[in-house]
Structures are given as C-alpha cells and as structure tokens.
Image (cartoon, rainbow, N blue to C red):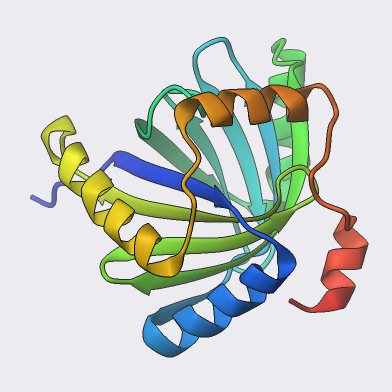
Length: 195
C-alpha cells in the first residue's frame, strides 16, 4: 500500500523581476526543471480554511484543493485534492458561489516549477503577489515538519531569499483581500513578457 504524503510544508519569499529571472536561470542550471505551470486559480476564503479551484493551462488539467489552514497560520497544513475536467471549471466555480462561498478571489499565475535539493520551488508572478517564490516539501506527519522547515531555511539562505513570517503573511494577505496588488503587470502583460 502506498502512503500519500499529504502535509504540505511551505515557505514564501517576495522577490523582484530581476530575482525572478535570476532564480529561474539558477534553478534551471542547478536543479531539475519540472516545467511551466501557468494557471487560473479561484480562491474561496473560509474562516479557517482555503478552498481553491485551479484550471491549469500548462498541464491541461484541473483540480479542487481544500487547504485545512489559511496562509499566515503556520507553514504546514493538510491539503485534499480532487481532479476534474478543465471544461467543467466554470460550472464548479458557479456551484461554489451558489452554495454561498462568496468570499472569492481570482488570480492568474505565471509559474515555473523546479526541484532543488529535495525542495520543490515555484517561481511565480501573480498580479496580487507580484514576483515571489514558494518553497515546498511534502511530509507524512507533523513530526517531520521541523526538519523540513530547517532544510528549506538553509536553502533559502543559500539563495538569498527572505522568508516571510506568519505575521508578515497575515498583513500581506489582508492588504490583498482589501484590493491591493503588489504586481505591476496584468495577466495579458505578463504573458506577453514571456518570462
């Protein structure tokens, strides 16, 4: 029987456009490129959880994800995913809205994924977050979280990334929910830059 790793340990760092280009080049040269991962994401914000509908343009697939903890409430959380057909994305979003999930945010992600030193990197741009980096390790149990955090901290330091604290994440997310965007480019503008 295969045991699925279902606890995501994730750290985030804000970067600028130059760092976005540099990180992509460094990880392409020194890590394993896992491919483009451009997607449309719809977030339904619940009091203590996050429900996400993702239409993955690059991979031609789609999924619903329930993160059992909101960003800014710790670096580790269980995530439950269910795949569906891309052509059903609009219907699923409509169902969630009709069920009363009205606290909704949309985001287009320009994203490239890498594996470097057993850590999955997502080098991303969204209009709300701007240029940023996510580091992730999947683990089986809460006991493994401290080691995963330590491992990612060492690599973040090596790459010159300033990891956001939970408090910084909470403030940042509240600004985004209030309508603030860190990124200067729209979906069409970032697509035309071909980053």
